[in-house]
Image 1 (tube, rainbow, N blue to C red):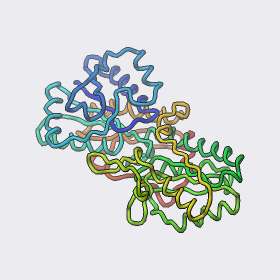
Image 2: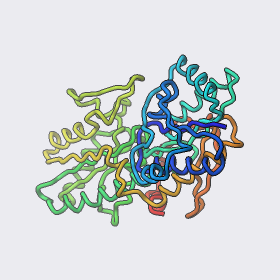
Image 3: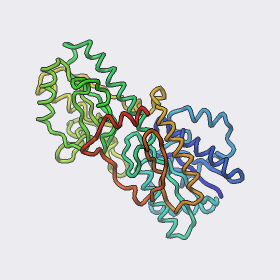
Image 4: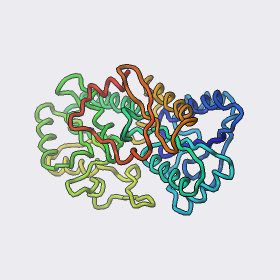
Length: 372
């Protein structure tokens, strides 16, 4: 029984913890079989730059376990129909019976496609997916490894920025802090846990689940600044207007870059902050500072939480445990029972769409998950 593992999409601070846990469990259970690691995500399906993870040294594993980024290299390649056939043929030629995919929603979609095509071609192949994303938007799991550490980064950043800017009250007037999150506002909303009291920062939080209301935003900024002399807002990068346009698209000279599918690459655009800052300056006459942590929120090793390491390792090991008896395509879901964590299998066919913020979102409950 040979297997292949890929790290797909963008990195998190603990995605390598899942990989190393998976490799170590594989070695325990299948000492005579080979586990390959493909470089740069789905690209490895058609351009097999693989390393033998069954034989890498303990030093390599220890270094990866302690490092952010992706030890195998990430990537956002999408397989065409022809490439799917090439991938299935290549896997069969190398006697790969199981593919482990560590990634987010796009990775789950790729896993479904590979599994479906393998069935059509009558090629035995199991897909065991491990959830990974700081966006926390994968359905059917209570939390996604990578999110707790990124949330901790932003919570502490908001607290520290609030103290810094409060010291400059009168000079600083409005501060806008951008959080990652295209379709789901989990990270932006998590910063509500930075509050110790009702008037603490963040004073406003803008999330993709709620269409942007220009008048309401300006009224809220004006009221907060009038009350306290300072307004601090957390803004998810994916905030849209009532017509469904990203706010980054509302800046006339914005450099908007798109991927092969036509989707805006928000991390390479100006984001929503320039547009919001122009409103604050032009309509309210207030000075505005922009803070964009960008990739720091997903790669800060200094902010890795204990719970994030635990669930990342748990999911990686569980993928190997389930591969022996799994259906052809499943994801390892994480379940929280108080301060205990367990896993269960969810068919990949159920992992569709985004898990967005519920209307009754409770930042206190989220804080418990982040710090547990």
